Length: 153
Image 1: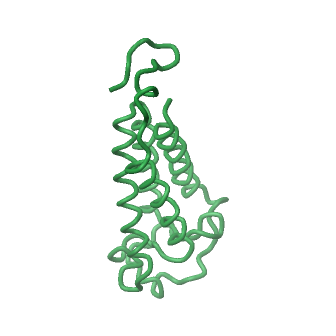
Image 2 (image 1 turned 180 degrees about the vertical axis):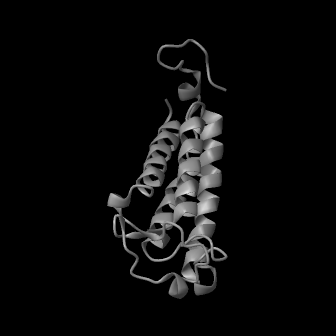
Image 3 (image 1 turned 90 degrees about the vertical axis):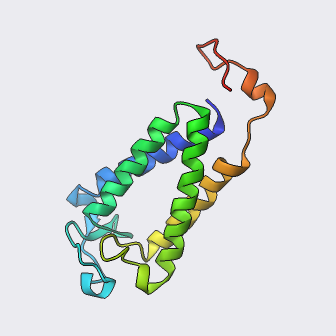
């Protein structure tokens, strides 16, 4: 498994688990910012994951989808590179949106302020690295995967 595939798998598992944890009340603390102050119109499940990250049901669904896509993308090198590149762009945009009060609620649907901003920024930076910068060398590409004889291309 190449490093980009490992990244997609690890990030996929991480975000999937975050999505699942968001539905478990023991992991969600009462919000410190009221929905009105946050500009949220959709408040179902609103709270702070681990007391740090503002979430709601839609936010949890996004985490589940991002996680599942990462897990499935890790199967092949080309899909994991595509996943990483798109993830980097997606979370880069979310980082910028989280910096401006007018867009911190994603049109009143999903909270992306507070600690979410730095988490999105770190995710975007690492994903851009694996999606656009890391390239396997020819020796890596010609070496068959463990347990198989097929070359990746």
